[in-house]
Image 1 (cartoon, one colour):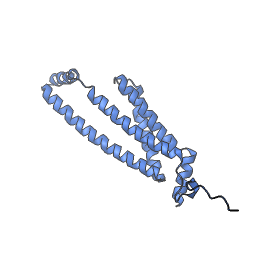
Image 2: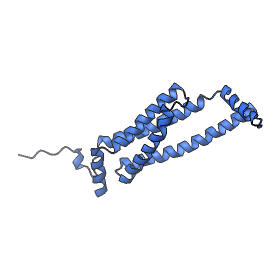
Image 3: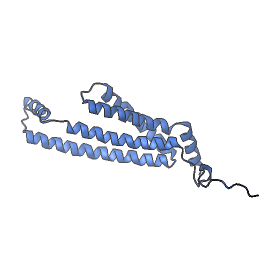
Image 4: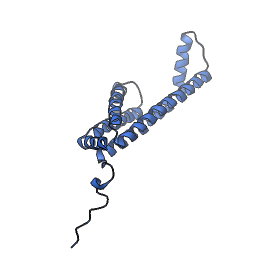
Length: 170
C-alpha cells in the first residue's frame, strides 16, 4: 500500500511563503487606486472650458496682467503636462512599493500604509468638502478613497501579517 502523495501546489510545499489573498487584494486595490487617480486627473482637466479660462483671463486683467486666451490655454497645457508627469512619477513609485509589498517586504507594507493613510486623509476634503468639482470627479474620488482604504486594510489584516513575518524569516 502506498501513501497518498501531497497535492503539488499546496501552499506549504512552495519554495517561499504562501501569499494570502489579502495581500493580492491589497496589491490590486492599490493598482485600482492609481487607475482611478488618473481618471480623476483626466476628468478634472477635460472639464476645464474656455469659459473658465476666460474667468482666469478676466482676473488677470483686473490685476493688470493682460493675457490672451491662447496664452492662457498654453499655460493650461503646460500645467497639464507638468501635473501629469508628477502624478506619473508618484504612481510609478506607489506601484513599485505595491510590488515589493506583494513579494513580502514588510518595509514596503509600512510605506504603503503610511502613504495610503496620508493619501486617504488628503483626499477626504476634496471629496466631501464641496470643492466644486463635478459629480463624476466626486464619484471617482469616493472610488479612490475606497481603493486606497482597502489597500491599507488588506495589507494589515492577520493573514497578511503572517505572510510578512514568514517572508522576513527566509
